[in-house]
Length: 372
Image 1 (tube, rainbow, N blue to C red):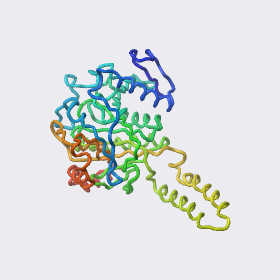
Image 2: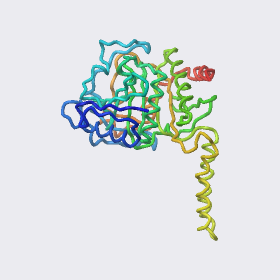
Image 3: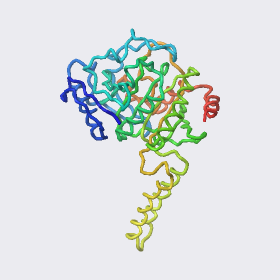
Image 4: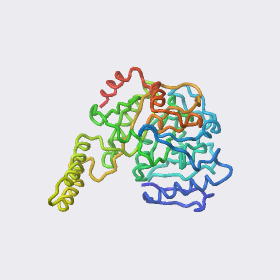
């Protein structure tokens, strides 16, 4: 599907890789990232050992004080419809020293650039710039959603999360890009209960509610159109939004009900005194058959795509202890202030999150429902 081209300065000089598989993709991205990170003049700061804690068994806090004052000054953004400006910072102006590799699809002239984030939140923080040669503004396109899902399924890595911040939702560069992040802990939005709204549309009713879609390799083509329809509508209404792509529990009706019931059969075997040893293998045979009962769950990686409408920001970012962008809305908080890192409670975090909930979300939900 993809041809990968590695810049000539890398150890594998001007190499092309076709028909790349999951293991090679992961190895290539991380190896090249580490090579660049070891260089003395590329990153604004280094990310090696970083402190991470979990608050209330729900929120992940990562201490990164350097990002608070060593990153590039964010671009002034006051409209979600701001056009691309070649005179302002964009990813075509980045040094080739920052570039990991480019991806090229068959029968397409588009170049998809992957480069290190020189002000990383954590190790392997990478920027994916779809169709970088087209100089697109930071507005989701149908093709870019398809690309992001292709990359997610190619990677086959539960630690990989892919995020998007729209203009006026803490995007700092008006040039189309997504964030590739790695985090071993499961984000709470990957397992939060989802309420079915209509058709492919679900809702996670958190502090800041998020619309949610379930995607598998088999349903990707339709899902791309469903996701884009929502993103396009939010842009038309000038509503800032954040998008997260992550592995997650199935949401399709039936999946969540069937699997736990099967799993409960195993503990009941242990209650049997006579013949217990023979009963346990029988119960284990039931669990793999659960997923066969729901077609969309058969032997497929289940990905959740969350689209979170939120109050829009305006002007330059105000860096305090943290900003509420795609990661924070998902339960992962890069914290810039060491003084507050150990003192944040769940209530503190939720208070800040609540400031970004749309006051008219119920009305918006009804409008979005009519799209499907």
